[in-house]
Image (cartoon, rainbow, N blue to C red; front, top):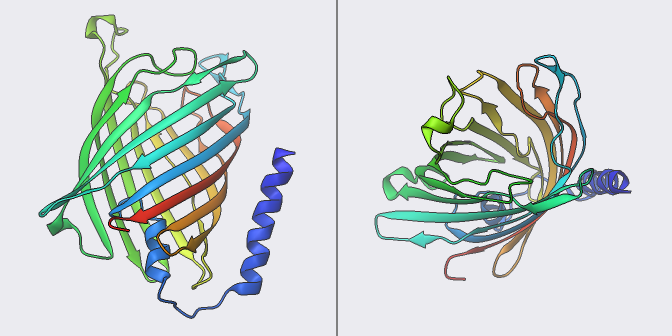
Length: 278
């Protein structure tokens, strides 16, 4: 039933685009672009559900690759702090995971990130910034039961109907170095998340590559690259915007990656954004 729902939603998006799309720009176009921009100075409330029913089971170091978790529900809140010379975008992400086969579930590591964007690095159609990243311990059955600290940086830009950019994250485990295996470091995998979205005129519909986070493991030199596609629509309201999308994802490069590699993943998302002062 979940597979059918995803397919129907994607089909509805494509059909609606065929009926409503035109290339005439409307005044609300800028607001529609901002609804997809996580670095814009606006409040954001994101609700998402991701379902991962299948994982690859090829061999890793002579053993079958371990599967990942089955699903998670996510809440992400961005609370902007506009100042005279810069803008701070604190972002908090909560996730509740479930492992159906074992019956285990619980909250994962809470992620707290504050992107700092100097006015000099905000050119209107885009911006760049960097800020601290902290991860709080989660339920040991579904996540790491330890603190993490590091940084995250973002670069985004709008060009016509295109919206693109990249988010980079790097964190380190707050653990006793003597407790680590020989030759291992306390560095978590480097995360690189490029994104590219194209809006279909003023219809509100768009397509993109989705939540594509490439990972590089400093300890094993393993590299993981997911690939996916996202179909969505933005509704510009009087005091804010709604952004709804459906996304499919699989693993593109994973052979030398020792962690789980998802074969089929589906996500449903609804985000409400509200500019500061509204």
